[in-house]
Image (cartoon, rainbow, N blue to C red; front, side):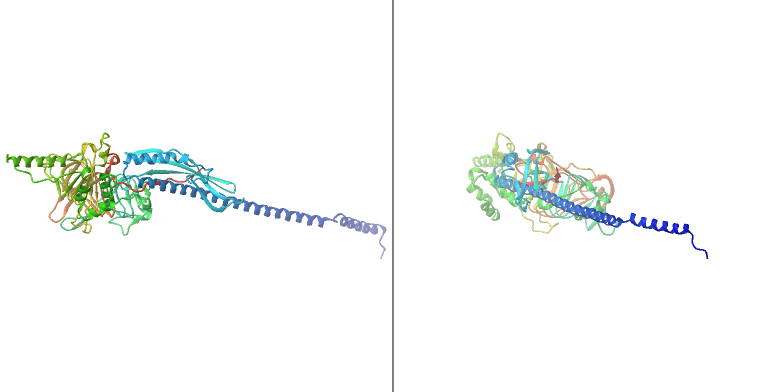
Length: 598
């Protein structure tokens, strides 16, 4: 075999030199790779660390933000509590003040809030601020303050006056500052006077009434399309629609229910609004905890105190009311404060003897005192205003500015009051604020400019025959554009108004309140009211639409929308018309608006 030539050796040597060169060129690449990976890990670590630190800072910032918001809200809550407490003290001490004077005192207090409050002076007991146990990073405690209070804005709804101030609270926690604003509305009128129909317990509406104004349910609002009634036997009639031109104030959506005759079970909450029974924008939540209540018996004592003036003992008044001796107590202890007389039997006009003339003069004087009183009056026993002998009651100074004491004049009857003008063509005029320890009965045509308190308690269950107030076959009109406010401790019966009449009557110009349960009907009769009706217990409405005729064993109802047999329309002038006679509350009504972030 021939030996390899020199060219082959040269080629092998060249290849070896090239391979060794490449090895020398790649020396140090592993170090670069390691350093690159270390750099990537370092960047990744720094990124994670930065994110963690930033997240912690954001969390701390968010925590401070939430805490400052809560502190600002707490500051507003404590400011409202301070305002409420301060005003309640003033209201409690205002028994001898008129409503206008009370309103002026409230406005004065609210107007002075700004000058009383110094956000920099946390040692000032008048300053509105909230402290907390929360410590800031500098060791000090976080404090929220009221930094701005607007002057009160007066709002008149009809003649009801309310005052609105806007509070601005500021709170700072570890450098995070938040501000919240809230409107606070104040008035001193009892809440029940603000509603067309309402109950502190259950408001039950069956059938198809027409209601203009707001309604209120302190527990449940129950609506049904079936009106119930009793003729010779219990009966029912399906009638639609339920018509509300106003708002429904309820405790919660779960307390709103509707039942239809052709549907199993009941609709609740949003189901009621979705079914179109009440539109969602008309349903408002108003907690009963903030409802300003009244008590007829307590208000009755308040009014006797007003009539007596300074020094009247509530306990003595109450004891004598319970012992049926109120008239004797007032006339014996406060004789100069009251007119008082006894109405004797009417003498024979044909008796022209001296004794007969004397008896007639005494009788005429007693009639004049009872019908044209000049100051507060006390009458012992039952009194009947019949339009013939006693033609009415007229306090000419009832609201006269020239006689400031006239606002405290009360006509006190220690017995029952009957206003009976049944069949009389000329209305009886009653222009007086009246306190009745017994029952009140009203029949026939009567014109009122009055607030009446009826004190007798009802002992019968709802629907029984023991009524404190009976309005029967009555036509109640307003005197000189005013109205009647009737406060009854026991049950109220409003009966036989346009019974089986298919022409709409003139509405009752009245506002009724009872400490008991109540039932109102617009089925065989027609119930038409301009004013309102409110019950501390359950209030049940039964109403149909159409014509109704008397049948042998049942009411013959021909349903249609041409005649609404139950109509209630709110009268917002009641606050001005009957201001002196309205029950006084012992606490202000405070309503707060939504929180607004600034």
